[in-house]
Length: 473
Image (tube, rainbow, N blue to C red; front, side):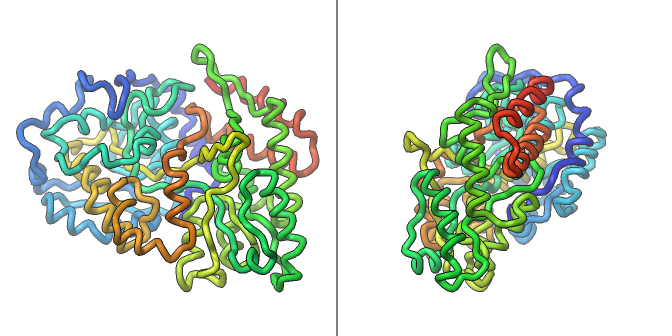
């Protein structure tokens, strides 16, 4: 499920040295970089006609996070070996220590692993010191990439999320392609249809309505037989992951920014008057309609409370609701529906995302075989199988999202497909790319807790902005 929500303190400490390492040269613009050059990539060594068997007999090593996407991959590995003759050895770690393991290995230069899972935000940490292979030259080389891989089949905003020039503040979608989207999550509202029906409620179409709705459910749910139910589950722990799902989605829908960029210099603006007003409203929503122990809430508590009928709504990753909504998964299964969530004042449905991606170690000695693996793992055949026969939901490919069998599988979840189709093209990483992302957003979460606790929002956010101004590029 959405296990990326754990605190990244150890990850931050291990990766801190990356900022001192030299930057890689940017590799052009557009998908996969500049079409006219590849800057001496190992992809240049692959010539002739494309052949799946060209690395037959090779073994590649993968580092994987324990996740339903990983389960789908491992279940299908025999298909990859049969197709290529390449053996895949893998280690799977729970996320409590997954990124510790990956960071140590990449920073050591040992290349114990050729390929690995990473979040798109990690490109901002791992890319500048040169730990990630630019996959653009591989994508552009017809000898290395089969036509059936069909780059145009990816939702373009997902490919762009893993593409960056490695310059702090520079927009995504330019520069090298440092990972490939594999599975992702959009952040929307899921709600208990039973309590909504009994109280005569409907999903909120504005943020003001959401604040009122959360309070109404908490106040009136006991009258409808839902003792102890509160209005809305959102994350609240002192972690970067508190900021990125519901909070950042609604923040972006209000046309608010984390930083402005001028001449390569980043200036924190989460203390602007509009941002302060929004943050006060968010804290008020949690006070009026959230859980009593909100400051300890991670994705796990949010998801579990929706499934246990403790929360009337959830504003978080759609997967966090999906795994409670499927038949027999929880007391609320069969009674959970999905909604895009409130629009911004101008009708915006800008939505923040998380993407599990696949990358290649820049120090790998088996890059050709590793690229075949990445190509297969992000290809149509495997991803279709993962979506239909496993729980690899939220397809990164348009062909899978449009597949009749996938739609049949998801159709029993009220509003899921409609919500996905409504927000997919407006879902992007809403943060400004910069290497201090995890530290900055963890500090932001701490500030949100202070405001929730009663401290003056303007002074708290002014302090946060002053602190971050000295840390970011």
